[in-house]
Length: 332
Image (cartoon, rainbow, N blue to C red; front, side, top):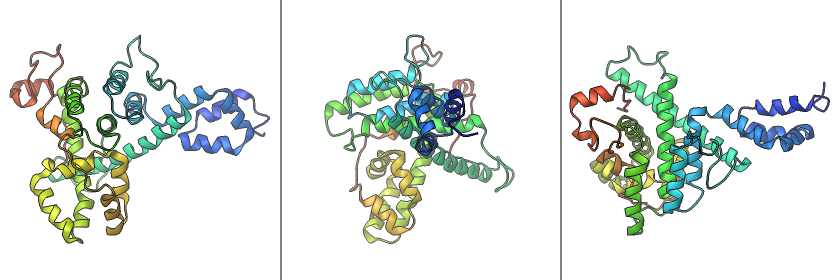
C-alpha cells in the first residue's frame, strides 16, 4: 500500500510519531502526500513532534530558553519570558507551547528547540559522567566503569538546571555585549535575577543549578588548559584563571555565551580548533554572570517558612536537613 492510498488520518499519525524536527523536515520533503498532510494539520503535528523529543515537564524550560534569545535585552522581555515559565500551569495562562510574546509554535521554533535539546542532552551525559566519577572517588559507588547511571529524576534535575542557565544567558547576555555596559541595565538585571529568576525557586533547586554551573566551569576549563599548554600568552592567562577560579572575569565572560558555544568548544578536535573558537570571542569579560548571584544565595519566597528571608549561608543545620530532603548533586 502506498502513502497516497493511506487514509488521511494515518498519514497525519505517521508525522505525529516522528522523533524530532529533523525527521519531520525530511518526511515532508520525501513525499507529496506527507507534505500535504503536514499543511493540513501543521500545529497538531508540530506539537506532537516536539513532545516526542522533549519531556512534558521540561517543555516550559525549553520554550523559555528559546524565547529568551529572540529579542535584545529589555526589562519587559525578561519579565514576560519568566512569567511564561513560572505561571504556565495557571488556568489563565496560554498553552504550554504558546508564548505571550511570540505566539504559537512555528517550524523555525520547533527546529531551534530540538537543536538546543540535543545540546542539553549532550551536556547532561557529560555532567552525569562527572558526577558518577566523583561518587566513585568518594566511595559512594562500588566501582568505576560499572552499569551505574543516574535515575530519570536525577537527569531531569540536570536538564532543568541546564535550561535555566540558558534562560539566564539568553535574557541577560543574548546580544553578546554583557550586562555591565549600562548601569541601568545592571541594576535591572540584579533585581530581576534575585526576585524572579532565583527567588521563585526553592533554595535546593538553586543549589542544583549552582552544582551544574560548577560542572560547566570545569568543562570550559579543559580546552582552555589544552590551549594554554601550547601558547605562552594563553599560559600567562592560565595563572590568573586558576588563581581566581570562578571570580575570573574571563571565565565568566566565556560562560556568558551559553551552551551552544560550549558545545562547539567541547567537540573541537585539537589545539588549533580550540584556539580558533576561544580567540573568536576576543577575551570577553564580565563580573555579572550567574555565579555572582548564586554565590550570594537566594531569598526564599514569602510563603516559605520558617526561614523566610534567609540566605542559604544563614540556615541552621536543622533547617537545611529538614528542607533539603532531595539530594543535592555536585561535581568533584
